[in-house]
Amino acid sequence: MVWALIGAIAGMVLGLTGAGGAMVSVPLFIHLQGLTIREATVFSLFVVWIGAISNFVFQRQNVQYKTGLILFVFATVGSFFSAKIKGVMPDDALKIAFVSICLFSLWNTWFKKPGKRNEGRFRYLQLPFFGILIGFIITLTGLGGGLVLIPFFISVLGLNPREAVATSLFTIILNSTSSFLVQYEAASVYLDWLTVGPLAIGCVVASQGMKALILRLHVDHVEKYRKIVFTSLVTFSMISVFFD
Image 1 (cartoon, rainbow, N blue to C red):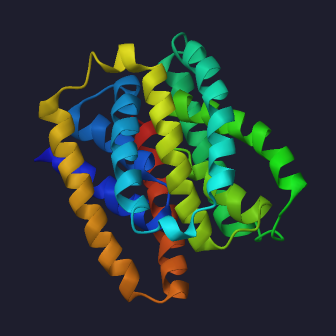
Image 2: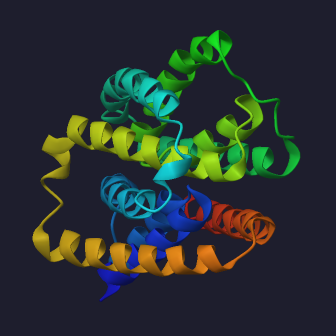
């Protein structure tokens, strides 16, 4: 039941914000299931992957596919190098990295103004650098990437919130898959059907519920709730992880 609850919470958060699945699931795995930060980041990658797929299905019409694919290719490079570093980093260092990314995303959400829509060649010159950075962060912290992707899509590329969330979900699916495969040998020690089954079911069911809610709300209200939920989760996650 606890596994399903964690999956459901992550699924709802991903559906509303396009990010934050790992922010809420990592502390829950630690405090409710007694996992270490290292184990929790592995489980969070799985639940973020499932949640992103579930929510992507009904938002796919807003996806910027070319942007997402380019980010994915270069994020794979970042994941490869990050996995080697993660293996030798102490838990406290992982916690500091987790909190630092959370603070950066919080600042972008409230204080960074939307950028001018960035089309053409300049957009694609930026994507390799950000792709490597995002892949590095995903593997190191277990964060699904939306914490960095959403601010980047809105502030740098100038996408509207619906496009940003949908493209974030698409990129998270690709990046989380790559990152999980890079860590598969270590992850296989922790994961089994008694845990991933309830996680997946809770996540999918909650994602469908969030879909129905979003369709009923005005776009401005959705954006307002997205910021509030996002901020609440960032604050909760930083306190839970850093002071564990």
